[in-house]
Image: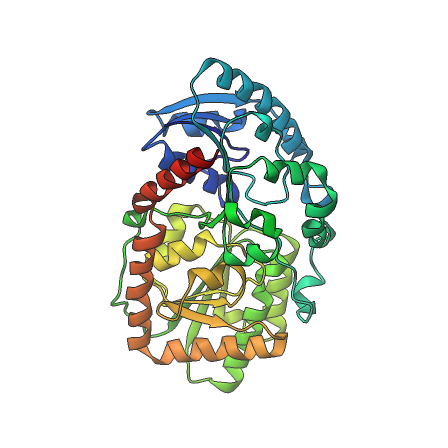
Length: 402
């Protein structure tokens, strides 16, 4: 097939959404001819890696307009979309295009004028829309006010003609999790299909099962922003120190951040656990892999997560994971590969998080069981090399109904 792909963020050297954009582009270009439209800033990184089945088209967007404003909309997106629409119309006029697939932005809140081109249109996987748990005040009172406005997103399916028009004209909507069926109006449910936004090449990650463990090594990888709930993980370790002092542990925390990063460091010091914590800041992915392959338990307490690429990386390395039973992580992790912590209130969450760490720290066989099944699940459902056929079937379905 010939697939036209407008991808707002698409960077093989990036993280989060821009890496999602690249991974999907790379996977789809293995089986189909792709006409890519993306930001000029990614040209060097893309063209040194992709040489087959991709026709590159770039538009220039002022980087200083990346700042998110009302409800998290960067003005740069709208500039990109207008320019991409002009390019997409030209391509569709002069080339035979089977369908259009927009990968990023991965949030469902972004309207799209390229849907006006009369071709089958696929959007996603898209996510977002998770509301903050009201009882977790220490986490969400520090949230950027911009994100608070996103609680209004579901109302836009009623009042926003641009968003309504986008999804009315879309042939297929890929969503990151089942929870989005409660956010999207029922009129769109027949178009929707669950498909995790993140995929991974598991062959790049070595599974090490027989770790030489004297002191339990815990690991957190992710951005330092309030809804990641790192402060609750630190509180759980304080509880561990008070109630299970016989367990020796160390926690390594990797990820970029500013105010919240410093807040967590201060909190660890105030609670008297800083000597067992190592804050390493932002690191390159190649460096992080070494930490995955030496740790015993991966802790990811994020309370408002659509999926989590770091979970796929940890599970590929055969690490038992602990996650909040909410959003994307709750769908990625099942009873055979990790522990899900119910989200009721802060004190209960902290106590259960501590208990999960204790259980895994004391039960080597359970860690082994979770590790083997985590790796198996990644290979079967989330590996780059196994999803190509499913994507092609989605495209065929879109063509049949477009």
